Image (cartoon, rainbow, N blue to C red):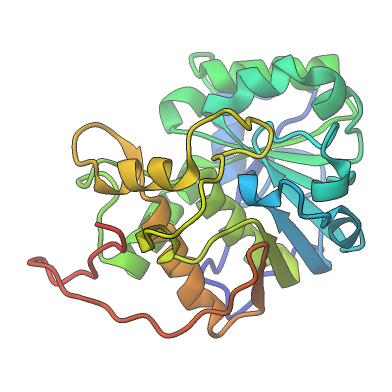
Length: 293
């Protein structure tokens, strides 16, 4: 069953379950304040979870068998298993997908959807994309997807809980997401949800928050399935330092994850590292300065 742990940063995570049945916007909004639309809530509790990132650090790692031995395997967006089994494993219990990755997931339908009847999909996105009055283009596509594949387990994070994620980010960093032109990453949502679902979280492929400070760091692709893609640290630093437009704050988020791991059952592999107490430097607003800035 879905458990809400007292030590979790999120006390309660409500989501909207997408069903193949017709549901009025009024009904959806009413039920989203509680837990799920129709049917039963997500029943998922795992003793051990492998949270598999999409990082190029997983290439050549041979962690696949170790990952698959976990009770639950969590992946993000359109990260594939096919062609990478020795490094990332074969199983997927839960896949957390950003609104911006929906089209890529649909393009990889044969592997990611048709062969994933046992996988739970949780989609997140801004309210403009996920509104349920017929004008939310992502939500509309998800409803169509559910109609075409009725056995698929598809959920969407409700608007009220998206706001809770924003508040969690502000509480942990002192930074207001909107005023700082920041977008929370899929990794942020995935880690917070894993804390609700898992007794122990083993994270594969996530670097420590100070990793990109080193001039001796290796060049590693941002995604293991795009070996010719951008460098991971270059991507992290670009987003972390940008103040114009909307960007992810990857390094700031990793600083929070590192802090959580000092008291919660979170462990990091490939690379293997253990969190140490962070030294915070106050900026003019009194909030911690993001690492790498």
